[in-house]
Length: 455
Image 1 (cartoon, rainbow, N blue to C red):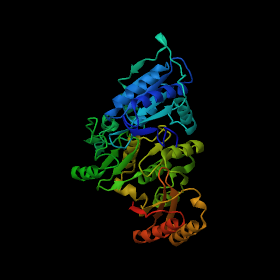
Image 2 (image 1 turned 120 degrees about the vertical axis):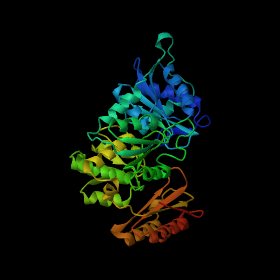
Image 3 (image 1 turned 90 degrees about the horizontal axis):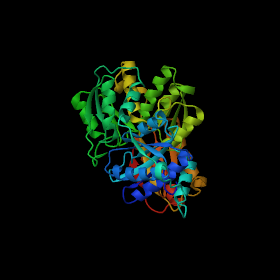
Image 4 (image 1 turned 90 degrees about the vertical axis):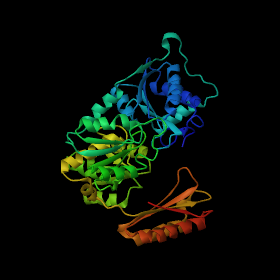
């Protein structure tokens, strides 16, 4: 990835790696490039609830103002909320300060263009080039030309009203537990669900700056599972810190991940005649059960590399409206320009009402096959996929699995590892199959022992 930008903005430990000095430079370079020197350009700035948000917001805004752009400060809001408001308020760009599902010490800065979409790699590289110039030669206007901050106190209200318009279904007293991860969803999700008629039981909805994602939210759903069963709720919904992903829990307390959610929404859109090109975009890591479910519905699939930015790229290129990841990033392009956990939650709840079926029934649209992941440390990831012996090992395991399973071998994007994922109906066989491939990789290019992780 780039010198500063990773797969989802600039990330790091706040005040150590992601310093206010770096935030200031990002604000200057990003504002200059994204506003195209337009007089009195405006940039939306939002943040999640983590304590370092104030520190980074102040520095980022100072950088934006220093090149003459104005700031529309929207306060605590979700990442998709920033994308929506950037378009709705006709801003020239948007910035979200968040580290998503990461712990409180981390933070991040991600940019949106005026169209509400995340920046492409080339634009991020141009921002990096501006930041790394030996001398900062960007404009420094004075007097009346310095940028100003305009606070939108109604930002969350605007976004809540928008989310209400995305469904015609009323929840009519449906008991719903909302795990807000003590993050941005806390100020939005309960209001949305109450407005469409749900009986809301909030969970992890009291952010204090340091409890974001702490044993709660989409990456820690145990408390939500317990609460759904204890309260006799029809549905449980868990968001992450910036509310761009969703994991659900059915009325029996069973987890429903992004693959299941995407499958349910795909069928719902297909039934309504709204699944453009009868196609769903997903990553190579989606469960083989998802692929089989889509095939049974005659829904086409486009597969991408892991990462919601790649899903979005394929969606825009092909004119598709639904895409997602197993992690719960679901993109519904006919509503918003990025993954939106609360929007997805509203659509999922609407599917329950429309069909009259509980989530435990809707989830039977697919069967999740067991997965085993083996990480193989290697000397070098270069040219691993042209190694004849590794190819033969992969082909041999795939032949043994046939149509009832699959093998996915790929290099890690950040570590010196080759990841071997084997998926199939018989969990007992997976370790043998994965180890067969891993052993060949270790023999050909590996350096130390592997680590196996069941999924």
